[in-house]
View 1 (cartoon, rainbow, N blue to C red):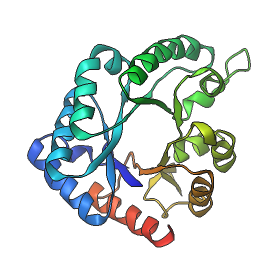
View 2: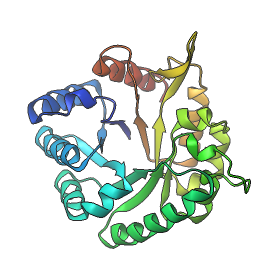
View 3: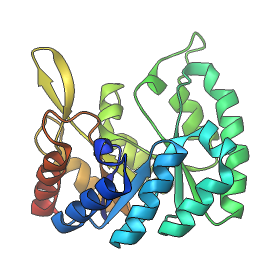
Length: 241
């Protein structure tokens, strides 16, 4: 399933009217589904908009505190929109990840008991080594009870071999974030899928081979309009999948 993370088009998720307009556009471009994102109010608003527009929702991505403080509201928004996965990202690095994972595993039990899967979405700070030599990603891979939601850009940004990471952890990956990286005179930054320097064809082929169910486009920063970036990304993906 080809989906898009709604953080990509966040300027269109401030009102129900704008969200419905943007979701209709995304549906027309050929996206099968969306992944909700943000604080609880934004998740609730876009869940309602998704239901009204009739586009599938694979789940929501937020932080652990939102999960803990707004559990019932989060579950209600996902049930309204049909989403089944709850994803989190976190700021901890190195050995500090241990306490976060313990909290996350407690919530994972609650999510699973209520019919939801639970996933961890990485950035690149998880690849920073602590004095012990361990990285947060090492603890997450070994000790986190939920699934993994790898992000291709942030894996590469952290120095990982993207394809190897996907292959090594395939059994725990149901959602893969597709995010491309381009090199500029000012350093590396985000770009539309297929427009950057990453081996996107190899990554997508690997995802297909290992049976990853959901490919989710996400672009943290768009140089132009985010809906145009979403169009460029899906046109590339439709051409190779």
